Image 1: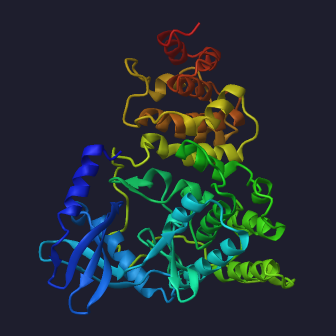
Image 2: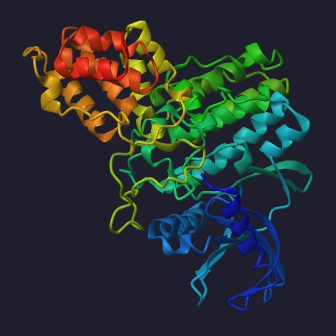
Image 3: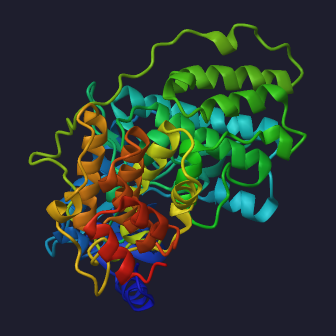
Length: 489
């Protein structure tokens, strides 16, 4: 997590640029904000006599090739988007001193997030109109092969355009990835943070993005549905105290009704929001254009005009599911290096296995109560360092020692595969994944002693004394040693 000292250093470094010039063309007048990948300043184009916004990459990130790729991708990607509802990039370059910067149109307005904070819920008709404009930006981005991946109220700017006080500009395509037909693999939860940069926001993240599955433009429609939900109700669909709990809820919990929370939400809008928030991308509107058409019909309905009957059933082909990274900027691939220990939400190593835990929660039936409770509470558990030993002060037994006296049912290869995965997690010190995999094996092969040992060991490692029962039932030397060392009765 970024410390207070490092935040201060970042702010001071940004403030030091105020009053300076970049390449003799742009004067830096004032700091507008800092965070994420860099700082944003109010600037002035000396030759064009024009006020601009200047986004500068953090100096230390300018030496990180992957951070530079994301920064350049944002500039190039936004340049390709032919929509008046996407913020315009005017220029980007690197100074002789190695400072990477981007020049954007200067927007004078307030974000939807700020509007919600200051004024509370947004009236349904107004919220629908805002969302319809967002769809225009998303449709343009998706047509050139870009998905946003971090759509949220704070990335939607409302500016005055003539008599319209709510002209929408979609900000920050810094997380955008190139789809280009085949697209790219979603970032897994293990890669959500890197160097203090957050990839996506849990409150609005589609289940497939949380699980590290392939993405297409429908993940942006999910995020827009979550944003629309917050606009009309005043809160995110799954308000939780812990980011991991939020992600788990997006994957497994039923979508709460917006109308049940705020009666003023019309049934047609409530139903559309629910479809946008469908767990299965195939159940969502297929494209941003299709969603915009449905929103237009609801807007007309709220204005008193009859709603077209065909709007909700248009047949529009969905964008192709992403399969492999085809980003031309990534000549050597865009693999995420080992996670920094400066994790943005104190997700730490527990983030690595959230996808596995919530995935198993969806795909399995009922479990023994102790295991179910541990898996369901995984998101709320304190962060665990994946590099730490599984049991401090206790030697972890070798796989051979665990397997001693614990023959696997030869007829169940699936259980054996889960056991192997649990053993690998055990060796890596990854308790949550160990628990999820061992639980899956135990459900397939209830007499598998190795799986029972691994469940008990993981429960104890998480501080749950119910693990003692599993260790005693395993009845193998490694389990007895583990139970004795933990003081099990």
